[in-house]
Image 1 (cartoon, rainbow, N blue to C red):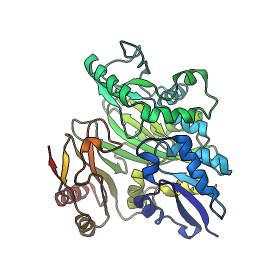
Image 2 (cartoon, one colour):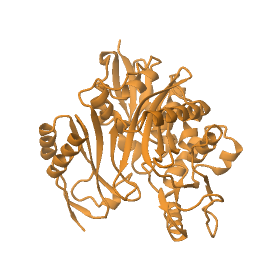
Image 3 (cartoon, one colour):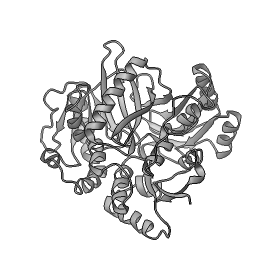
Image 4 (cartoon, rainbow, N blue to C red):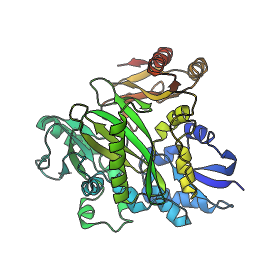
Length: 424
């Protein structure tokens, strides 16, 4: 009998990726709550858990696994629900040690030196100041955030003050529901006093940014891929994710060692993860940016293009208690792949967006391409959900290519065919 796997927030792209898994006949995937319910609007964590339990309790067959590819609240709902139904997953504590940015830094500091100076920022003070030992430029951010929302690069006291005002206004949207998660744990006093709606600062780190993907399985840590994260020139917003990474092998080996130490320290097991790093080419310094207790669903088509199997394979098999069947790089149809972000850096109202027919035509003319439009006619960009603090995402383009030159040429061809128009 096929194994019944429930997927929180299952959308069309991830359903498409799941259909490309080996041993597909062994699995039956079921959606569990919509992406809109889970990520948009007000988030009530306990209510979402209860709603998911109601649907699972009504299922007449055996439940074999519960998974999810998205950030909070999905990442923390998975271990809560798995514990309720006796299923395999990482522990809630280990997941929260990754999700709570300050707690994560405390755990990292215990086993590695490759992290920036950091500290808490008290938003309740009349005159809010950076923490001792953290110098400009720095990133100011909530201890719980998604998609870089409310994360600000600040270079001086004026920018610091403006960032504090914006964070104060928006921090409760995720901070309060995150506190409902913290209430389920026996927290160390240092973390319990901080809570889930706090703010922190970290010195800015620079260099080539990459994401190391891997999994914890049977108490061992495995890395299965490294993806480059490339920003727009002069901007902190991503232009593309590209796989495989162009980093030297020796740097990847050092990152792998750091990854093993922090994941073992946190105790993250029976799940995938991704860790974001910076490597400074001039100083040869590595710095860890953050740990995410899931693999990146954004990378799924990239792994499928290059390795022949989406990274969803590893999460599904781990959740079922099976060997993840890790594969060496290569074996897919393309040598290189990328997820491109179509962005605009000023606000406006979308007057025209690419039509479904235009998107389908691009995908036909450029095999190995998937286009997802995020902004539709009539949308005001500043009102779109889950945006970073510096740009507005209009769409995403996944594509494979034989080499770097073809990858860039194919994207330019794609971009020329996808027309957006705006009213200022």
